[in-house]
Amino acid sequence: MTSVVFVHGTGVRAKSYEKSLARVVSGLGRVRADIRVVRCFWGEEHGASLGLDGASIPARSKNRGAGGDEVLDEDDPLAVWALLEVDPLAELREFAEAAKARRGGGGRAGFAPGRQDPWQAVADTARGLSLEAVTDGGGSLDELVADLAPHLGPAGGRVAREISRALGGTPPADGIEAIAARAVYALAVQRAEGPHGDEEPLAVDGADRDTVVGALTDQLGGAGRGGFMAGAAKGVAVRALNSYLSPLSSLAHTFRGGITEGAVPASGDILRYQVRGAGVRAAIRAAVSDAVASGDGPVVLLAHSLGGIACVDLLAEPDPPAGVELLVTVGSQAPFLYELDALTALRRGEPLPGAFPRWINVHDEQDLLGFVGEKVFPGRITDLRVNTRQPFPRAHTSYFAHRRLYELLAPELPA
Image 1: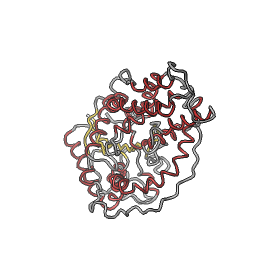
Image 2: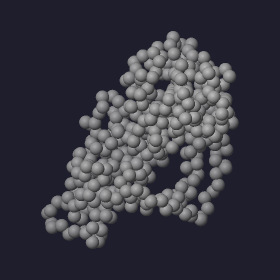
Image 3: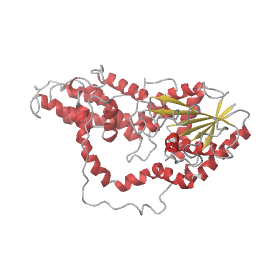
Image 4: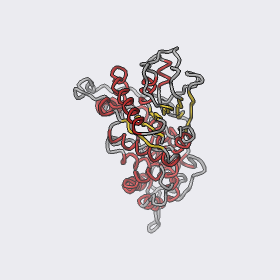
């Protein structure tokens, strides 16, 4: 039986690793029943932490920083989702302002007594949204639905209140269905990840996200689905995101302490590895040794992000662990670090050792932390591109929720 040793990347701790491991076990199990997944969790012992309780973080001064002036291209879905990650209701608020402006002001329409406000019907539907019929038979979509289900009611209620507040009494306008659906989805994701983003970030495939949003849009009436945005919604996210760019800079400074502490596991692990990486490589070596000792088949290293760097360093050492037939790096920076001459065991210009195993490198073009290697190590590495349809940084954390990844890997794994 083939053993796949799963090596996590930067910023991962126990709870996060268990969730990712479960996704890998489920994903590989669907395409290759003969695969045994082996743990390699190094984050707790060899990961970074603020040993002095953040004493190095400067206090926030009263001087506010200046924001940027970038302009968003119209109808960019990734940019819209990037906006909704920051503020799930921003697009809905901008829609309301645009609807009021078209009628020549922000006043109410003065509907006759007894006539039902059309926005109230939308709000009522938002409160009753459900994902009970959304399924893919036990795959990543079902996992996403299970994560969101407890939060869908509160998210729908919040959107309903915003619709009633901002649009109640104004004339009908096209395009609200998809915008409201995206807002409900984004709020549910935000709630699932904790009030301060302190829970494990959801690994979400873009296709699964679109399926969920499509189901919510259908329940809201299904209008405006010919493109990503239609009718009154055209350009709404453009204006909303551009209005947010400036405040975000000062907000980042205001909450610098919390942001820095939250970023320590991700960024700190990288820095710590550069000078204390031997412990991580020793953990991987031990996991490979255990896999070889307990199995009677080939060993594959499946490594994400920083884990891929550590695996390349380990396999390039003079005494690499025996038994590894395939290395799969996912969203990894190893080729980039080689080009920078920043790998531990391999200097720029040196070829991969002759005993280095077959290497497959998986990347998503939206993942700014994923790199390609075919031109860096010609003839020694195969690049495979996937498209999780997620904006960065979620593109970096969603590989193992993307079913296409496992379909691509299935024929490549040794028997």
